[in-house]
Amino acid sequence: MKKQQLVVRWEHPIAILLVAAYLALAALFSVIVPVYETPDEPGHFDLIAQLINTKSLPVQNVERPNYAHHPPLYYILAAIPASLAGVSDNTAMPQLKPDFSWPGTDSPAVAAHKTAETFPYRGRTLAIHLARAVSVLCGALTVILTIAIGWLLFPGQPEVGLLAAALVAFNPQFLFISGAVTNDGLVIAACTGVLWQLLRTLQHPERLREWIFLGMWAAAALLAKSAALVVCGVVFLTWLIWSARRKSPALSIKSGMAVGLTFVALAGWWFVRNQVLYGDPLGWRIYQQAWAEVLRVVPLTVRELPSLYDIQFRSFWGVFGWMNVHPGSWLYAAARVLLLGGVIGWIVALRTGETRSFTTLQKGAVALFGAYIILQEAFIVYQNTIHNSSHAQGRYLFPVIAPLMLLVAFGIAALFPRKYGRSVLGVVSVSMAAISVFILFGVIKPAYHVEPLPKLSLLTVPHRTNVRFGDMFVLEGYAWEMHEADQKIQIRARLYWRAVTKPDFDYSVFVHALDANSQMLGQFDRSPGAQAGYPPSTWQVGDIVADTWNVEIPRDDWQNGVRLLVGVYNWQTGERLMESSGSDQVVLDLK
Picture 1 (cartoon, one colour):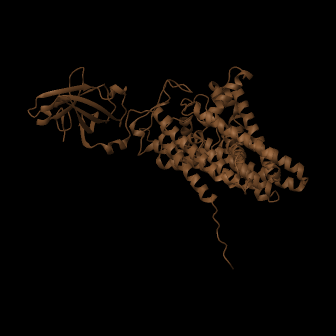
Picture 2 (cartoon, one colour; picture 1 turned 90 degrees about the horizontal axis):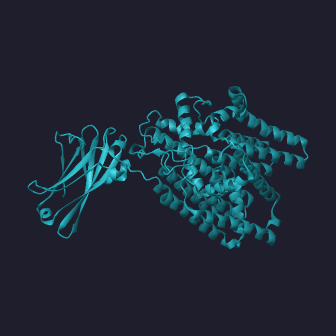
Picture 3 (spheres, one colour; picture 1 turned 90 degrees about the vertical axis):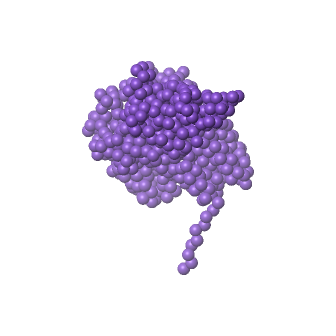
């Protein structure tokens, strides 16, 4: 018997490359965005920590509001790797700012960050990054499923599925959310999986196993987040329409039972639990009491809708942090051009008759996509009649990001002859990936300037000292350079300090320049970090802070040999901290 050979077409390695590029970018977002600087991340992680510590599902609490109103699937999945790191060690965690207001203050940071939370991670910080990795993988599943849906609907145009996946994978906001501790990533992936499985089921409705798989996907979506009620409704409506057209009562009953019983068996317990604990299947009444501060106090008016849609549009493409880091209007202008191209492409396809050759499945899918997008938007509007403007965020539209981008991708592809399909795919993919990289390093990273240095910064310090002053400071090392100006030599020394314990006072550091005969040539005194607004009393345990000191000396003295003496003292009393060898100063060799 002749063995069947695996045929690798051009789109297969492109798909692998696209998913790999997404994974690389999402991982970068998850590492570079500081801990807690994504919406609701502290609350989401608290649920994971509770699961690990108590081995039981959290319960809603009116006195101490938590996120227990969310279904538990994401938290269970994230708790598996997070438990390997442990969540009992809290020393490396950033300190939440008590005066921070959602969605933002003058500073975008919700927390005061420190050296201890940087790589290599440990304790709860490591657990958070492992939980973020689960979100990254959920995003990868969404990208893969988007490709699968595109290839299922347009087998003759594989570039449509790939282009749609690129529009998903390299959306800056999608990357930002995919690198955060949040259940959004799982519900997006699960809703996309429901859509993929629904199309497969419509291809072979006589196979009961397809309906069972559909029930499994729907249950996973609802156990990820309650927003999946919309996609579950889409499944039910699709089954009703299909049953009415099929006119086969026996098959309709069997298929309905297959999907319905599977869903109830896997997800029904969540509603029963809520009913027992809170008196209603969604736990809505106690949620209203616990989270009264996010509920509307005045009804939503028609006049507010344009503002809410503007917030939704911008944050669908890129509003970062806690809705307080903005990349600029250029991103939204580019997004409008992209969407306009998709609309024009559909007009061209309709006028040229390209859509007339659509199969029954393709026509049904377009109608299904449109209905799902409209229902999801209606659900968001409904949520905004209950909640304040924080529920206008674009990420709440991400459960329909795959069908939305598939429609856009088909429209863009229709603008160009088929032979240019790969070129269009390449240009759009590379451009969007480049935009996301720029936003990460040019917009998000600078917004969170942190004065304490990362742990790895000490690896590049040319002169290591490891001298301890008192029980609070360690001089880890120094770097220096000299500059000539007229008859003077300027010595610029950069000192690297680490806090052993939290300093109890804004101690000063002196830097004295001595000649070969130990005569004073110049000096400089200052609290390290004070110029950057981070004096010692604000340091946390483990913080590494570097400060630069400039001392000018005569050129002749430099040629005869110069040393720097460094010490730490209380500027109010003049008392110096003793270093580990018993002296009150250390000599820095300038060689």
